[in-house]
Amino acid sequence: MSTAASDFFRLDGRVAIVTGGGQSVGEGIAQRLAAAGAKLVIFDLNADAAAAVAKAVEGIAVAGDQTNESDVARLVDDAIRKFGRIDILVNNAAIVGKTACIWDLSKKDVEQVLAVNLVGPFLLCKAVMGTPGGAAGTPAATGMIARKYGRIVSVASIAGKEGNPTLIPYSASKAALINMTKALAKEVVGKGDITVNAISPAVIRTKMLETIPQSTIDYMVSKIPLGRTCEISEVASLVHFLASSESSFTTGQCYDISGGRATY
Image 1: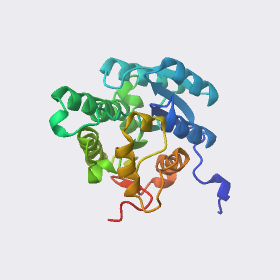
Image 2: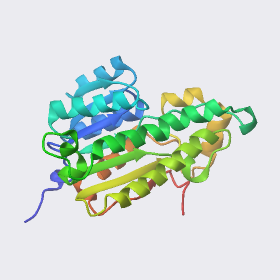
Image 3: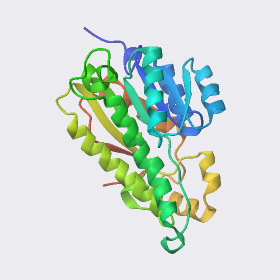
């Protein structure tokens, strides 16, 4: 039985959480998934931004801090109360942190970035997975493990593979996120159609670049053979594939989207 090309990568009926979905890359990802038929839950620190995007994609908005366990629990509860389950989690929210050499960084500078870029995704992954053997009527019973289906996609960075000077906390946090992805993927193998992947973009054209010195941006772009930054739409398209049912044999991977920077 043949399938029309237009049916590929459809997400009709799937429920997706996009963190940092109220702006920039997260907004682009949310729009792409919604266009494919997904029901969206937009999670963002900025309540107004989350509400605006949620309205545009006909989803729901939840404002909160992904480093706060109570906020993450509320996010999952709101999503399940509204849609009954969570099929897709896109860990997109992140911060760059202070741009400086190691001798100008404090312990707090490092801890702040690790909290948002690693601990936050950890809490979110744990919350949507649930636990094996969840009794009916409990949050665990609606988790990906109990339902034997799920897609987790985390937005890492090429900095997590190669390291960028003056971005030690950010580079380290993204390296940790990539390895958490690989470890979690192995933990859930055999527990149903659950895949866990990451992507590692090179520098993306977003407002975040306004917070980074031009010298750092020039360094990053100079490493890209295509000679330009990545576009949000390009990131969203890769996330879309990994969030779809077609990615069922793809797990524990980190896909480069680097304009040729990464060739290993």
